[in-house]
Image: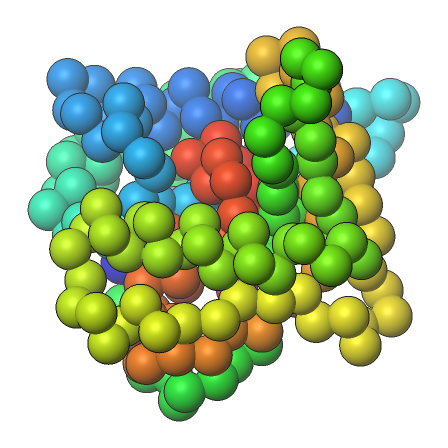
Length: 221
């Protein structure tokens, strides 16, 4: 299930590294819930409709943001919390919420991304290695990460026969350095091809792909 939030215009400049503020808002609405303490079976998009202005981001016509969750039991809780406490940050507030069910997919679909995809491996000399869309290791990591989430969600074995890969034919692929709680993460803006059952693709549409989807990475369009 996807919840689309329409926000009013900001009253203060929005910093470039606002993503962690969105995580804080989502966790505030899910207070006393274990969802954000476990592996993220949800994904958060970035804000849309903004433009750069004086070293910050401005949303004069308001912003659009969406949250996708696999567990639909969380939907009512999020909506009720957002209506009770609609404040987001920098003067923006929720003015409208709409719901969207996952579309029906065939056995293959190329997803555009609403937030960059983060892929990382094991620590090397105390540092986490970040992989980008051009690295050959990324497809296997993306696939295994999605399967791991499927395990947590107790999906049938047939849905776990899934493959995830960056669409390297896309000429506009690029990377972006994103700072979360003072830590830099190199992530990729690049579509991904997913092959599998319709339910597997719907699951990916909900939970996103890659790592830290609960912190604003890997949200799919």
